[in-house]
Length: 359
Figure 1: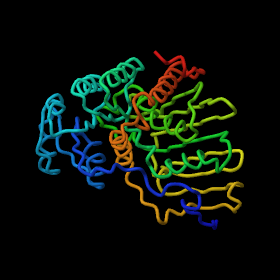
Figure 2: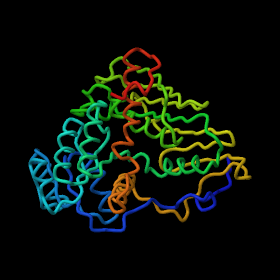
Figure 3: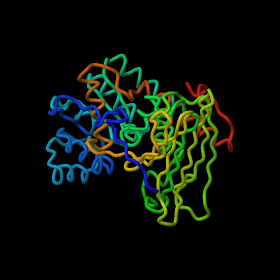
Figure 4: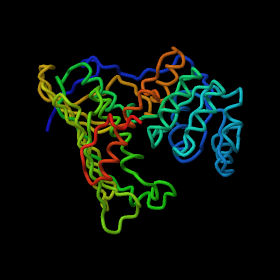
């Protein structure tokens, strides 16, 4: 089908993401595993920020940080890195196991910290970390980097600008094969709640980011296939009730034994719809625009990678002394939602109020 093209400028949407004025931020990374090596360091280098130190108890990780990435300040424990005066910003890239201890150490050292997702696996941990940061007067944020994948960022602005009217349905469908591709992963293949906690914090957070409000209650079911590799169920279906006639939907499977993977998203509103993936394609049909169905044209735009977008937002907040877009406090609503979804799934599918997960 042939579509007319429409640009971000025509839609009144920013053609780039906010970035800090300073280029010489000195970042220290705690935990130098696959996500730090494959995503964080390349993203930061792309925009000119320096990773000056790494902490990891694994000597092989420290060796790679030195030999492959040229990082000279290497520590076997995170406390030494936090105490290093050359480090201004802490980037926590471990699994959630030591989140709370690292945040407390940063609070005591008065150093700002952004952590990988999920913020934590319980509300109690999250609330304590928010309290640590508030008492110390430091910035605390969470890498919900999917918000800075360019189509997700654009979808948020389309809804915010009322270009499709009032949304009544928002949907994410992901068809993946991590049950095969990550079958031997030492953490993901063995953990509980792989889709509901480790993965769905991305998707539950996206729904609330797109529509601008938080879910009131959720219903979730999980499933598995005979012979799957992961301990956790690797199929998830969620219905999220946002109230006021707005429903969210998530279908996520990582069980594919084929190459037919992909991402399909849509938001339907009272004056139009958008369909899109996370990075490259968006179709817009809106009576507000007074045009026929259009395909988004990204000509003239300049978007950094999602991890640079996430860190960029955090550094802007530090520069301007304001709350990060995904501060620990703001991320509590996402954690409440995924904890409720996990509870619903464990009960075999039952409506759970998100407000009940406050403690």
